[in-house]
Image (cartoon, rainbow, N blue to C red; front, side, top):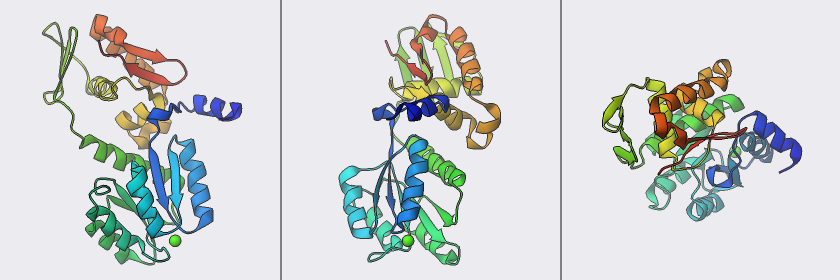
Length: 248
Ligand code: CA
């Protein structure tokens, strides 16, 4: 990564830690669109792989196991709808979320796509902002379905996710909803660094991200740390990026 790109990444609060990057597979035959998407989604911190036809896209999906597939309906050979069906049938790719890209003139494709198991759709022409929001929303939705223990204990801290309660040495800690969600996101990340940008988006939602600004995250982390006392020290600041939670 060039120095200039690193600076921009820092300013935007994007974490380029390789382990954190989720990959998106773009299956689209229009090269200009692929290039544009690649450029913009990389800026959002995603790793991009792409394919220009259904057949090779399918084998890439099986081999590389991307976090999400962006699938154009109009493709040479196997079209996007047939491909979506094939992806959902194949055991190795069935759980990978799919966003279908459809043309406005073909409204029926959306419905068929969703019936075939696509997680969302977007209509061409779309804005990159809308697409990014949809990608993040789908990732968030499908990520939440992953098995996650209901109880977390580490040292004096005990968090009950189903009851939305935290306790220190058995005594309940009163957290606001946002503080609890922050704590949950950090614990769930299992020691990985979460950028401020990610936390803003995951907890406050994309639509508010621009107004709220990243300082909100810092302010909430500060109060969360205070309330957690000694355990609060485990929320580690990663300078210019974000935060991570260090289990005992
Ligand atoms: Ca196309």
